[in-house]
Length: 219
Image (cartoon, rainbow, N blue to C red; front, side):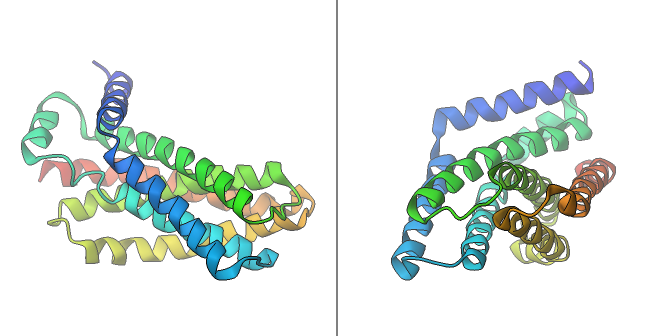
């Protein structure tokens, strides 16, 4: 079985397991909805800048809760079994793809609930939706890589925070700037630089994951 088939099988396995239990996804959905409700009770109405910042804060912490357990939920015996039948590259790619799908679902729900609760001030909905899509994939790739590293270091949550901080901060800056352009309805050509940066971050993160994870997995 080649790497592509291994990735498809592992992604399908994760989807089936999550569909059977639904504990993790239901917990994250509850977090998103309750956080939006608390923000609404606290602010009632917000300006454009605060609207944008609150949305990305909610999405950031939802992604941390959703992805931080990517590897810790797998028992050592199951990981040993994976080690004997699939390649490390297939494992990390399948986790990134699965977490990206989860984040796209969560971001869609969060955006819908958030827009219904607060007045939607977006000037360019298509660009904003594209930004949310890129942001979801970026969060998934970064936190999946960091989760894999911290899992092999004894599930150290402090290590995960330290490793993700240098990547998440510039990522958030670019996302907020790009989404702010969409909110104000600026010409899309102005946002080309931010889109290229986001794509580059995703490519670099996935490449590093493919290069680094086989050595972590071997240990």
